[in-house]
Length: 399
Image (cartoon, rainbow, N blue to C red; front, side, top):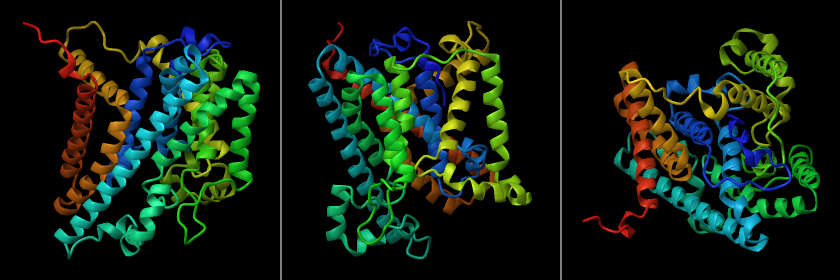
């Protein structure tokens, strides 16, 4: 949601890759916010989903996640490409692809098993296998096992990590093209996006139909490499301009009635207008209006958070409110730092939270405490993942 992280010396060094080895706190903050929104968006029947950014504009938390992932990837891999070699940088990316691939496989089987167990546990209740349209897998497991492992069978709900995997795999080639000229890398990225939107470039999601991956990686790589280019220094930070700020605000405001369902359901003019621009706001191929709306939102956020994110940082006040905000901020940023582990947990937990709603009912009280439970579990996963990554068993014991 923010271009905040581009305002660093590394991002302004247009002719050299990123120097940073520590993530900008604004990157962790906005990616953490995106993780909470993604959880809400995937819980069936959660009324909080009526208040997420996707309901008020063309872009949503997915753009934030992918854009910030591009920035984080520049920090994680850019230094290797610059200081070691293109080959070792590619190896580092390949290792990350390996991790994401198995995360995807593990997530699918964990959820498939859980849905099967729930159907067995509640035979007269909701059909949880059918809710995720997983019957093709259970009815023809032998064939679909091959499809799952070769990514030729990618059920809806399980298509974000495969998208991210393909985009990561594109990174070494984009860097190789950028070695010739940064402009060529931009042309390559835009060309891929153009073929995804207007040339039919996509990947098959299932062998028995013409359905493609819902998140077309060849379209979505545009927002990823935008974030990547900012953090690598290939693109300069945008100027801070009152004119640009209010132009961005205007874009956000004008798009609102074409996105907000209450307006769409009551004003036929906006509903007809949305139908006319449907291809330009399409989520699967990442329509151009989504990109424009995201950049406008990102620019506004970048200006509002202030230099180094000073407007979101905790104050020096010793008041109870300031202390509470510091704890909340620390938790959000920890979630942003451990985004892969948190994302996997959120996709799994979202199904279980939906089951909890099915059995306790969707009341104002249950909406509060079940969402609070979900947020708490995500934060616990983030701190747990951080603890394991620190490898405390390798630290010397202090006597």
